[in-house]
Length: 91
Image 1: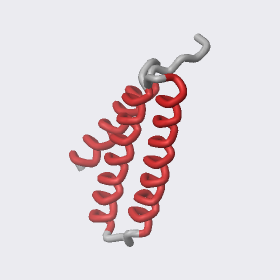
Image 2: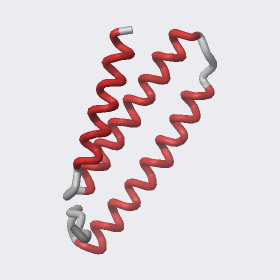
Image 3: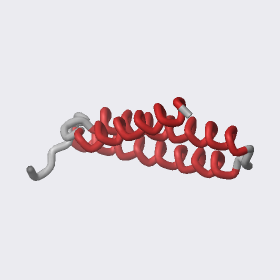
């Protein structure tokens, strides 16, 4: 139970860090990947506790792969256009 609470707290903390990132795209994407990793560990932990099937884990893993490829293409496009990963938007 302690491990579940710890992972949920870490996921909440990473979510707050993700939404507080304003300048660098790379840092935001690293926070997002960390959130996906914690979600996968949380899914494994819950499946281990409930003796469920792995369909939720496989679904999360597929979404993580799609998110990572989309994030990488967004980062490469941003760096190619602007020359850096600094986000310039209207304040």
